Length: 76
Ligand SMILES: [Zn+2]
Image 1 (cartoon, rainbow, N blue to C red):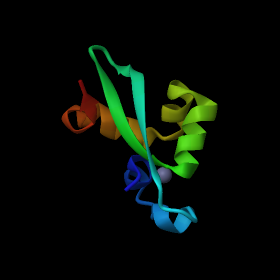
Image 2: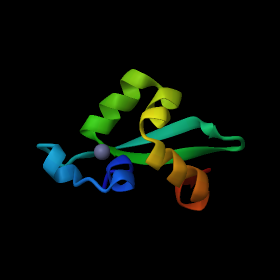
Image 3: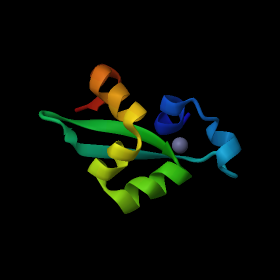
Image 4: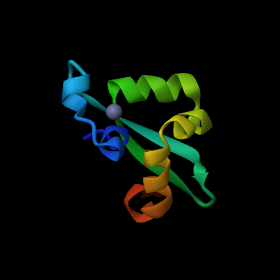
């Protein structure tokens, strides 16, 4: 399940023709760690085009989840 779609309650399989998921890392979210995200193709492309900060600005529900749930997203 795409983390960004789940944060907004969207069904990622319905939005995306394929259900492939792409693992991404956000390097500027946590001071001492990397946030690992699983994204659908739409959000993967959005992250690639927007960059971390603008992507999180557009997906505030997701940003909120990452901030409040860092054990789930934190990686290494
Ligand atoms: Zn998504």
